[in-house]
Length: 342
Image 1: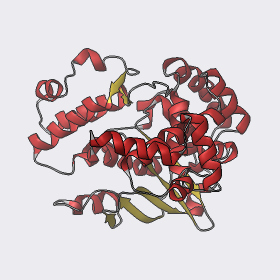
Image 2: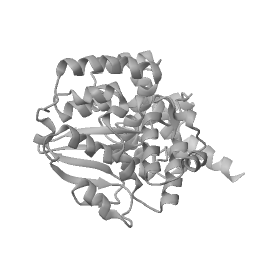
Image 3: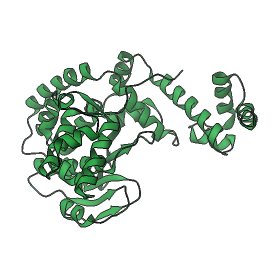
Image 4: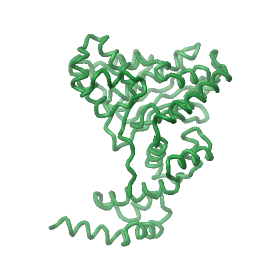
């Protein structure tokens, strides 16, 4: 049986900064809150989870009232590292941008479970971006505000202008796109459903002038308590999101997922255990969910489904499917088709 996880949320301190940005653009605070079914008390505590559905409505109304498709920039301008309390101070004291953003990724489950940041290092560049959960609807403005915040963090921490080589935003280009070019100080590539920034590798690994190992470690200990108490079971959701992205590849190992989360394999196992799950069960559960979905709603062959779920061959997939549903994939699909006729 699928475990019930916390509904998609964004931390209230982030939402509050966006609301303040909209008010600064002359929009009516009460109307914005009412449209999102929010009240001021929902945002009084900086650590309250706000349902993504309400944040989507907040951005929808702000865009309608302002007539501007660029409100993500204004929201992103108003979000600072200190919005995230101890985590922000930990990032400021990190040795490099790589270390700082690795810490954000490590604790991002306490900020939101609706999407996740990722960090990838290759020979020449570093890519920093957002992985979306396809099952969760997120307003474009939320994603664009997050991307604007990422580049502002880089500018705040670095004594030199960020060495950007590429900027990608997922929606189709619309009126006012030049505002994004000016904000990022780099031409934006639109429309391929990706949200990422690429930098010269050396820029991300050079030592920061604010680096302070003692201060960083002290604040990181606060983060462990701070987010750990408030948002239980968030690591499980992050791992599920990563596994869903990785199922089509051969690398769905504990090691690869731990590397993506920038924690050790041992820490990942321990934290999942504290949430009452184990890695192998999560992989099995996700494969079961997707196998059922593919058989019901697609015409993919059994071999194609096996490949999509990361099985070595169709035989291994069929044996796993019989363990889950006590019948073969072929029989399951046939039963679904026959029942839909009546």
